[in-house]
Image 1 (cartoon, one colour):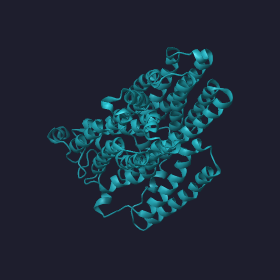
Image 2 (image 1 turned 180 degrees about the vertical axis):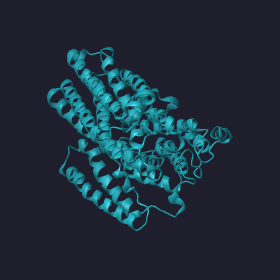
Image 3 (image 1 turned 60 degrees about the horizontal axis):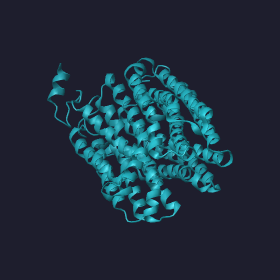
Image 4 (image 1 turned 30 degrees about the vertical axis):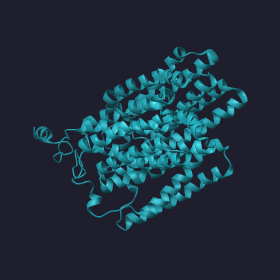
Length: 498
């Protein structure tokens, strides 16, 4: 009754300590809008790239960097952005990131040349790194255990729908040429979303001096004790991530020269130096960029490893199907996008069933079931393309695509919740940044490996064989994720400590 009264009395952005935050579902909607902006921006621009090249006449390398600049800036600064939220307030960083992302989107739309557009895309990635990592920490602070699964469960459909419809929306906006804007509309579409995120975030996100459910008073205990970002750690981690992600992003286009392998190899000693430096910071009583205690938690580290295989499989699958539909079958971007609608439907159904019913009861076994079902769906897509070859239709592919989406929905709904279930309040920011970074790394690995395999096979054997080969690799990535998921403690379930 006391919590009920406290919840009723709370104004937007405020909550009594220990009480349920009244506006938590509105705040969740704001966080999901930010996720949509990020996911659209990683997919929608690729479709508009040919129109941008025609408008600017830039080189192929410059056009590639319009996408790569965003991905690199985002990946390199994710962990730092998450830690800044711990120290200076997640709401403050969220609103700042949303405002900066919106302004950078306007700069992208107003660009007069490829250099300016690449610079604006880099700014988008920087502000996205401030914006996106705050969401998981805010959700964990706002929601009680009984609602956490439902809250995290909504991420699955949102991520799936945004990833699938991004290319379709990009193709439509570019060809529709609203108000004579052409390709610029793929960036202008962020303006209403970004303004809504800024205004609604300022109103509905819990205040930084307010804990919401189960957190300490104040933005963070570290902020009150004068903790700050340690620059050496930022430089070491940023350099390591850059040397790992950059060759993955650019290697396929450049034909994998020797320096790409040397760069990825050099990232490992940099990560080792970063780990040692963080331990020294902790021993001196400082505030590490990444909490070392995170990696003593089996549920988190196991979920992190599983996520690499999972996100590699998802990114590779979307790339493979998009390339096959458009290059192999000659379909338009709109036709290809509509063919992926069953994937989105399956994601929604699987996520709702998993997040609301199955995951709280069965824990990691839901992840295993989802991977098996998704793998069966991928094999079904391969069988359909093999049977009907170049004459395959969207309707013939729909059942297997639906099954694949359902399996992915079962996985995505509880994944982040299980990964964060055993994380303490002071570790949430670091955990969020590391999870998001793993998502980016896994996606980059999937695109690099499967993209290279697809084009290599397509050149020698044709698009049909290339598709079968890459769908087999997608199944292999899901199998790796299936095996590593056994490392997650058997008792691990959403909202439970492990």
